[in-house]
Length: 81
Image (tube, rainbow, N blue to C red; front, top):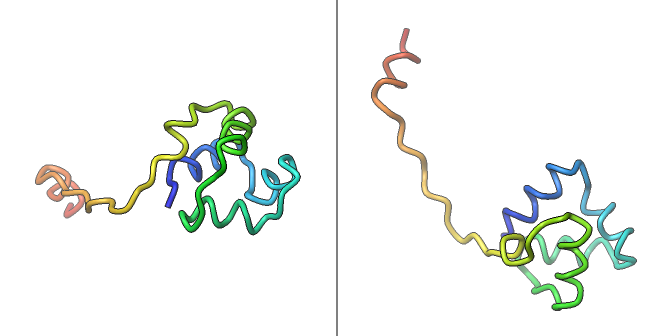
C-alpha cells in the first residue's frame, strides 16, 4: 500500500476519484496504484506529485508492514485512571 499517497490525498481533501478526474484516467487505475497492485508509470507519478504538491520519492514509498506501537507505561497509568 502507498500510505504516503493516501495521506497526501487526505491532507488535501481529495478522493481517489477526484485525482483520477484531474489526471483523466480511470478511477480503478488510481485505486490499483494506491493499493500497491500496480506501479505508476513515471510520467503519471510526476503528474500525481505535481497535483498533490509532494515529492514523488516520498509519495510512492511502499509500506508492507506497520509495526504496532508500544504504549508507554505512563500512558497506560494515565488511561487506567
